[in-house]
Image (tube, rainbow, N blue to C red; front, side, top):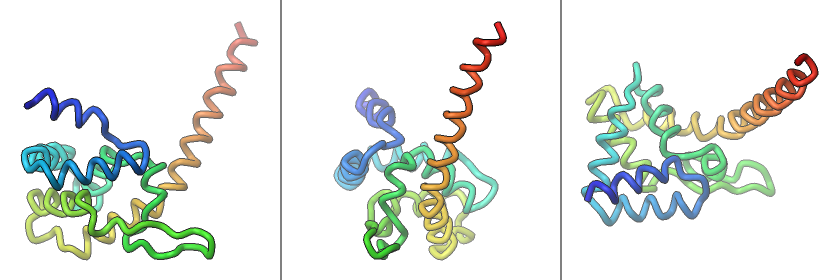
Amino acid sequence: DSDGENESLGSLPVSDDEGFKALNKKISEESHFRHMLIKVSVSVGGKDVRSIVHNMLRRILQDEVAELYTLTGRTVLKNSSKKPFIGTEVSRLIFSACQKVFKDLATEVKVKEAVGDWLHQAKVRKIRRMQRQEKNVENDDTSEFLE
């Protein structure tokens, strides 16, 4: 059912934790969807394990969701605990896709390190994106005065 597959891919990147849970469930229950998502993930490419992992994650998760996770789910600050990303269907899928592309070079350690780094930087990426958007709004406002 290619319409259903395209519809599911259209919901990527997921924008909230419920969407992430639903994606993990779909990957686990529908093998054809899992294979299609691996194929699409492989096609994003990258010059090395780190870059392909980052490219895949960017297409699967928005930073708002990535902020909720760390690699192992450790408590980061006293009041803030995050969920473990390792063990999710998405983490398994990323590892499988990396191994298809890079074979033996895509060691578990390299993939985990790249995933952990990407998750860790989610907050910084989100802040930078908001700053760029604010700057663009300011530029739009000043351009009205110039006309």
